Each structure stands twice: as structure tokens, then as C-alpha cells.
Length: 437
Ligand SMILES: [Zn+2]
Image (cartoon, rainbow, N blue to C red; front, side, top):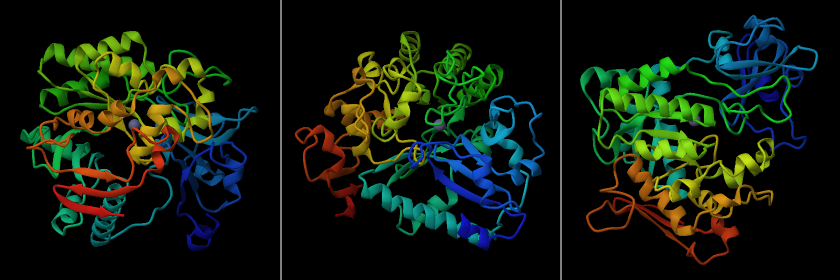
């Protein structure tokens, strides 16, 4: 960021990404004083990898006109230190005040197109390198995606999850989930956000967080009425709804909206998605099953974020990323990398789901372990089911698309703590080798 300081004119933002408070030497959140060391003339922000919280310097706070007397807005917080001063950490919807503050680099239309195409071609290469042949892709530049496919650089298939203008256009023009072909197909909506983040500890939960004063139960980022209205509008249009809900409070709200939509406009086999669906209980499980909803819980977190589970404690972790509970209840839970917050490597996900042991050697919620077979199914057939594509994807079966990976070793027989080390020898999409080691 010091390098960016030298390259950035005053008044323009200096941005940092991919900060993770439990992956740094001193194991702490950033604060306003840290970022003031980068610059006092520029607005400075560092975004947490989880995507729901950011840290700002004094200049940014001043430009957004927020100070110690500014009340928290709905759905977010301006965090404070022991003396009540802003500490620079700002969560969820409270960050909206920065949208129209400071200057950001601008690009011509051509530059934007080029950046989007090159970015998609790059990530497609990375996906197949780690053995992914299909993803549920949140938004992004739909025309760039088609250009990349046209020029032969799309190596994986995309269930394109819509929001904003494209969602509105679909509703206005009668385009439903399932439209287009097996390379780029309209899937569910993008995550409609109902609460905060698991990794950044802002998800909406039914008891206060441990060791936080004043008592804090996370951020609900949407009212029940707004959620009901959005879900009904999308559901009526024949588009598969998909909401982001981490905490038990938010999952309850999302289920309430889905149940209501099915009552006023019953649709068979709608498979509404709950992305993350992290902290569950028996009542929520029953309702998910009754609705035929599909949760897509975090897969790689059990390995990658084991350094954060102590913030919740073992009681919560026994009910979090609850693949054992989902499968035992007959719920076809799908995989959710949540990239970029979580790594997308499926083998890392499978190792975590099978062992519940993290990179730091800690095991949390071992009651939620599933077998290698079950984890493979979650990462293949259940993912296909989540986007209504189980007839063409998800297993190596005559008549389905020839999408598969060749592994150097059998995940059933290797040491379970080494599944993520298995080499991807070859990735094949539609019968064509798209990656070779
Ligand atoms: Zn999310």
C-alpha cells in the first residue's frame, strides 16, 4: 500500500484487499491508526477477505462526514474503541456512506471490456487447474463471459446467477431460470443478502457474541417486509431465488419469506437456495426439508478458517456448516466455496468436510463429519441438483456431459488429512481436456 501511495494522486482512494485478521502475525483487526500511516492525504481502505467489513483511515471517515456522534445505520456498524472514538472498522451496510466519497480510477468502455474478459479467462484457467468444471457464478459481466467463450477461453461451465439490471430485464421479459445452454445458463439469482458474515463475525445470531461489549448479535441487513417482497417478485417470475443467510436469525427470515412465497404462489420443485446457511438448529432443518430448499454451506472453511471458530465456540460449531445434519435429514446440500472469501479448491473443501480439522490442527464440530463418498456427492451431483442440472451433470453417466477430473490418487484410500494434496492430473469439460498437469 505504501507503493500505491507513491502512485496515487491526493483525493483518490488507496485500496487494499484480502486482509484476514487471523492470518497476520499479530492476529488482530486493523484500525484507523494503522491506515493513517499509509496516508493522511488520501482516503485509504482495506477490505477484509470475507467481503462484509472494511477498515478506513481518518481522511476517509472525515470525507464521509462520520464521527463519534454518528449513530449506526440499519444493517451495519461504525465500530468504536473503548473511549467511544471510531476505530475505523465499519461493517456491512454502514459502508454505503463511502460509495460517493473520494475519487476512483476510471476506465474507458474498451478498457473495462478488456479487463473483464481477461479476468474471466484467467479465473477459468485457475478453476480447471483445481478440478472445477462447473460453477455457480454470481453476476459479473455477462457479455464478457460470452466473448471469452466465443474466443475459446471458457474452460468451465457457468450457472450465471443474476442480480440488478439483468434480473429486472428477465422479469420484465419472461426469461426464467434454465434459459440458454449448457455452457452459460441463467441459474438462480445472486445471493440476496439477509445478514452479515461468518468469518468476520457479523452474522445475525440469536444470542450475543462472546466477549463483545456492548452486547452484539450481528447485522440483519434486510427487513422481513423487503425480503418477502423481493422473494415473491422473483419466485412469481419463475426465477430460482437465492439468499445469503449465515446466522440462525437470518436463515429463519429467509425461510419465512420462501414459505410465504410458496403459499401465495405454489411452484413445484422450485429448489430455493440458501447460500451459506451456516448456523442451523432442528427447527430450521425441518423447515428447509419441508420447503425443498437447497443450502450451499461453506466447504473450505472447515480447513481454512479453523482459526476463527473459537470466536463462536464448540456449541455453535456443532451446528455450523452442518453437512452431517443436512444429509441425515435428507436435504441435498450443495458445496459453497464462496470464493473469494473462501478458497475454491474442491479437494481442500472435501478434506475439511471429512475431517473438520483445520490448517492449524484444531478440530471443531466433529459431529458434522461426512464420508469421502458423501463429500464427493455434495461437490458434484448435489451442486448439479442446486442448479436443476442433475440430468446432464454431476455424475459420470451415459447421456450426461463428459465433465470430469482425473486424480493421481483415490481420495477414499489416501490419509484423510492429505486429500487436498492429491494432484489433479487432468480436467475434462465436454470431452475436451482443458487442463493437464
Ligand atoms: Zn454470501
